[in-house]
Length: 119
Length: 112
Image (cartoon, rainbow over all chains, first blue to last red; front, side, top):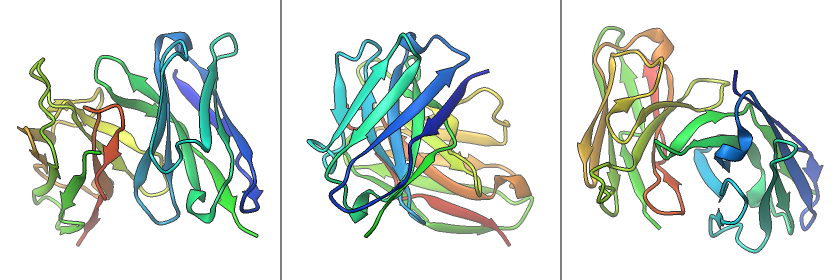
């Protein structure tokens, strides 16, 4: 069974940093592109970042470019999101997602971890 | 970036009646391989989003056949032929043609 379990969400002050993690199991992690998707309270879904199977390619939504870094550790079946210079607009539930390479769509998402940016 | 526009944003439906959601993209999502890189997701209350339809018209495994997707290029439609209570939630379209993916605003389906 595919499982994606996010962790690391917390309350952080504006300008602060946070590192999210996603533990993957039930599939060959190194064979899939992985992504982060977020959802601000009461708002819609927003794609945040993608990372290639071997980590050699990364893509970001414009609003986080230069502040967030997606990474992965295929030996540990884990995905990460380093978030710096956080602002109130980054407050959201962050979902880890598996990108189905054949369908080019997210076929599994985790339950999410909440990041709250507030003083 | 490709802008995705859904309508309506709110959709009250009587159980047993059909429902239809429109999604339009600012650029064609039809790739040279013949596939439209347009997907539909449903987020039920309190849950994570789940994939319903990929490449515009293909149901994901386990998705009931009352759900269907159609369209090509820039205009797409998700149809539910007979709505049931468990279909309540927010429906999103998403494009993955470009490296920077984008979602529509979401359509909230509720039962009358």
